[in-house]
Length: 65
Image (cartoon, rainbow, N blue to C red):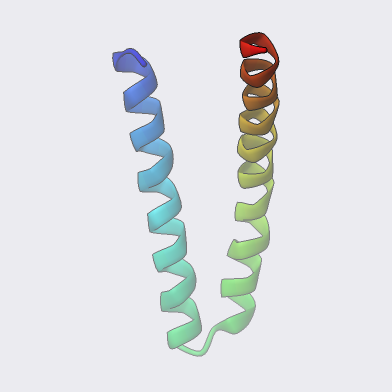
């Protein structure tokens, strides 16, 4: 993976960690509704990333056979 790919992967991981910490902070402060709202908003990009990853993984497995 090139420099841009490594940067992108690192940025996504950093963003997800910040979102998870924000969810934990909201729940710890008693603002459960805000924590759930952030969780639901975070699910949209996570499902898109997971879908693309699984699609590319199937292509790689198909090319190896």
